[in-house]
Length: 421
Image (cartoon, rainbow, N blue to C red):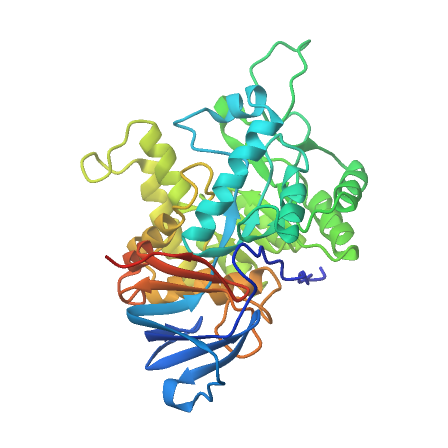
């Protein structure tokens, strides 16, 4: 199948004064792949003009110098699996959010969620499904581009595509029609639905390759390989990639063979499936934080109670993916848990087996490649967007340092700065 890379305009929300020349001088720079001590970064307008040893940079007159002693400067972080129109399920259940919260309330919440992500150092989000809120994500993306609200640039999926009868909310009598959290389509109807969604302005097509609709709620495949392959072809013709929710090994296998861009969750992935994904260069977003959050909502106290079977299995799955050489993204399913706390996913990636430096790369350079934006974001290099975050300490050695954000620059604008006491 043809592989499609996205080619978006880099959308910036200008919430400070007009961009100006900045010289940022931290203790170290993590450029997306490696750490460099003694580097500085020169920003001119909305782009990085120079990056390298501080003594090698020709600094023009009138540049504002920011001394970031004790800090590491990184590319703006990228969250590859978010739901900005959801909020934590221990506040309000998913079904109640879909059925009882107004569209206005959900959009109002989303604007707050976007600001929280930006102030936490995330300058780009891939939002994978509005869960009953139609194309509100497309409208929010436009509002960001116009500077109406502040937040990361958005790559959006609109309503996910699901097989008829598989998705929720469920549990109602057959004669009662309730709004669904996604859009149903089957067989050749996938063509019409995908084209309509693309016409409404989505950036990626999200499909559920499996779901919990088997006996006793067990996850089972929802689409045939042929259906998934036809969807990938239709989306590719319009320059859009397909993203697949898949938790079962069979759902993952079909999605990989169909040529999707990434697989989300992958709870039951096997070494064989991960080898297939690696061979076909398919990205994986493991969403570890969502799994642990759901276990906690069910009463699990981490560090006190035995590890739930679901969490233990996911740890083994993560190690299998690492061993197979799968491209692992930083995608957390945030919305299941609190917005602005995506660092939780990165901490778990380290706990489950990745090095801190590898996790930083996943959240910057790797995620930029996932989005097809590797020529514009995810790196600190001349010509790249001036999306930068400074944190106290050394996140390439201690990932928790990402929780001490001191400065966020978006498109050359300082959009967040925490003054030291």
